[in-house]
Length: 237
Ligand SMILES: [Mg+2]
Image 1: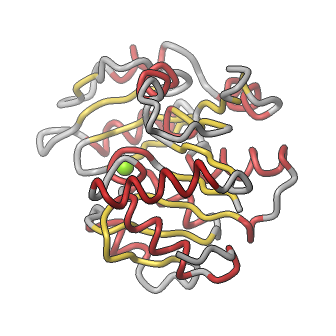
Image 2 (image 1 turned 180 degrees about the vertical axis):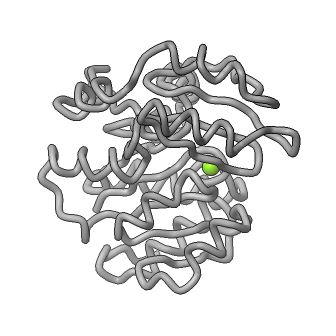
């Protein structure tokens, strides 16, 4: 199987005991492929991986889906990355969005996307209109993150593209997340887990989706719950 998981609040979340169980399962069962699918940029994921307790993924989909990297060689996965890069309008996106009220720029490293914080004072509709005029999408998540991405690019899109490159069938994939920028992965039809303590809007939007388990336990515990819930993965805990 392939586990495609969000990091913050998901793979990095939950109790210490659940994280230990999940991480050692992944270290032992080498037939489980691991992909991180995160809003973080690659430099931020690499610094997390300096902690040796964290299993190393084979691929990292970063920047909310805007980058995809093969970790052992630290190279971009082609042709997926070039296709995304070609859709990104460029640095003038940030310039153009400067006029929007209440957008606070995130300092983190960003590629082929622009990331902001938002709050009640933010003119989200104004930002959405400008994004659309630049052939970009606006994605809100966790009640505070606002990302501008090339139109149609999101975590689910890039995961599908990566699986095409790997020639891996969808039914062998488990996706895991906890906030609205993970929604595109469930919407893509993958079997998935919405871990405990997820963003309420994600819980509401995935309720009743037959491919999705809404887990009780938070973070890593929710991923373990899902591995036993879907018998097709053949993992018995
Ligand atoms: Mg998260």
